[in-house]
Length: 386
Image (cartoon, rainbow, N blue to C red; front, top):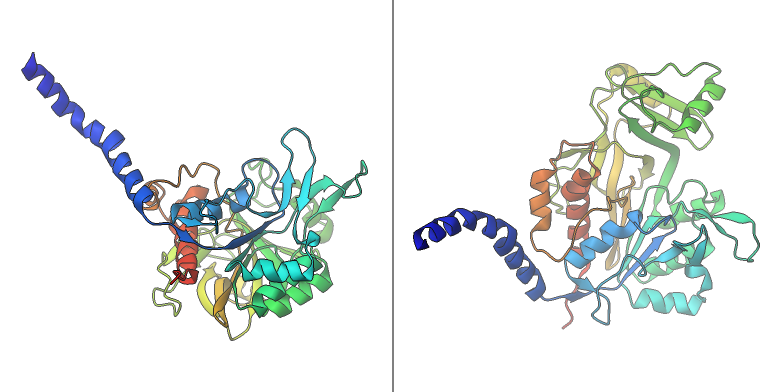
């Protein structure tokens, strides 16, 4: 009997090791790793449910890397941000942003924090602030956001902004001031890859996209197969077809191994989501750029649209003691099922499951590109207290 029991334990040991021992050691490693205080201000105006997709990945990264608030508590995706707070029981919610702050309060807020992160400013519908029954669009950058941004630049803090910070519903005057503060210019173009352009085969192809194209071109939408859609703020639209106008399977984010900022990132990772096309000043260093590998025909079309061969994806410039970053993509839109951040080594594990080339899984982009980028970015900010 004892011999049989020993044989049973011997057979069971690999499962115990994988299911119990390794997770316990991973948690213990995370638990006993010293935490680090870092003040972070998050702006997210596009919270539509309790998933908090547009900033949950950032909060997961902060918690996994053990950055805490000044009181030693960990950041919570449900409460530690500014913007729109939905009410799960109704279709309404609350707006809690910088518009309630005085100039003095904004200055004090920036002084106490090191990182200002605009994860998403598009917004959504919300109950109007005058308590009427009518619904009003809440979103886009506003004057109070610019005050915070300007003060952060003045105090030489680190700023991260990303896709759609400048586009609709942000007003043109606000956009121009944002561009001036950030030192970049939006071309007016946004783009996205679609694996299937035939609406009958792809239910996720936006109906408005097809309708607007047909109205603009005065012709029926007869596209099929994979391709990219370019949309300008003026309403102009162009469709690039895979194999005709560009040769990559999807747009690819390329990160030179020897980039001057020292980021260790995959040299190439597919990116099939929305991105905007910006022009940057010489002060910026390019961390990553988009490459669609245009054909001769596609290159001529890009030139006719006033666009370059390559598009910036992640760029950075110095802001005194801080940095200014811009991500030209919806990078912070993270999958809801990231798991617990309280296990050391989790990102390395998931990179083994979600390969870099798997563009159909949003988790692949998060584990292979977003987490390494943001984790290294935050590490460059953190200064231990003496």
